[in-house]
Amino acid sequence: MKFINIFIALCLISSNLLQAVDKISNGSINGIVIDKSSQKPLTGVNIIIQRTERGTVTAKNGHFHIEQLPRGQYSLTFSSIGYAEKQVQNITVEIDKEIDIGVIELSEEPIKLSDVVVTPGQFSIMGTMPLSQQTLASKDIKNMSFAEDITRAVSRLPGVSSNDFSSKFTVRGGEADEVLMLLDGMELYEPFHQRDFSGGLFSIVDIEAIEGVDLLTGGFSADYGNRQSAVFNMKTKQMTAGERHTSIGLSIMNARIYTEGAFSNDKGNYLFTARKGLLDQTFKLIGETENMPSFYDMMGKIEFRLNPKHSLSFHALHAGDKTAVRDIAPEAHDIHDTQYTNTYGWLTLKSLYNPQLLSRTLLYSGLIHHNRRGNTAKDEYSDKLNFQLSDKRSYNFIGFKQDWNWSLSDKVYLKSGYDIRQLNADYDYSL
Image (cartoon, rainbow, N blue to C red; front, side, top):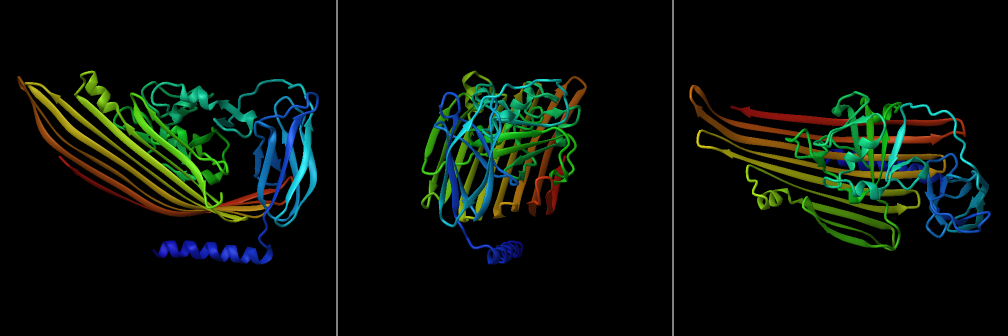
């Protein structure tokens, strides 16, 4: 409770100090992008606000809309593959006004190719912005076999190695635990189901909830900690204002429900997904009763726009696994049960104080639990074996981190932050 009070106090102090300087404003910019020669709308054009990390992408009809902008002067950059980049300067945004910049025409430009040099870099999967970084589309990943697993998609990217049995992957000869797994800024310590089989069969994150993935395979900065191989950064879907969507799926691997929508006059939005594994039922149908794996996971996100400068979101992720082994024969038997649970929860405050200064604050906590028990007996000639095993492990953590991004000029961009966490582990092993 003391930790939460400190978090709330820090947020209120920073918010009040900065809001005393800038009044709350709610301006927006919209327009349409078309092909100059054909005069047809262009879909997927990247629109970036210069000197910030904010932007958007045009819809199917070529329209775009950027909201929650503080009062001030803005410049936009329009770019798309096969078209010349275009800039629109000095757009004045006023309080509670919607600025329509009209029609933006892009001219076709041939794509120039020269030498191809392979270096450590960044790859995007399923992302809608920018399109030039896409490597695999959402449809490609969903058509892949074995549970529509988002982590298996990276095997197609350069420098990444994996096998057909495990969802774990390595980058440029490193180890699997050298890859940092992130979900909306939260580190996932055990992101795989059924870890008894090759370290994990598939991810605990449902692909339906993911909008895109950034894979950094080298050259990443200190804000990603001490990981040496790669950063696998997953981002959940951003809901469109006024839309609601619910889907139900069923396969031999799992049953799924997914829903998303908005509330409070589109000031808030939510996302929820849940899966229940059907591997145990599938094994029963084919007569396999020796190994009975089962799993489930669920994830929820609620995001609310406090004002044009601040938005607050809460994420929760829970996953569980159970494996029952019944290898019984007249001369020997091997019976054991394994259970895993993963629980994560985090509160995120995103703040845009002005077009050049933004921050992200996270308060997070989690619990990872492992329980294995069983017995083995063997009586074959002189080879005798009889023992019982109990293995209990728990790992809990709580932390607070904050990142700041400040664009001083077109050539100077500062990033700073800190991460404070407390971790506890408990082991109880008996044989």
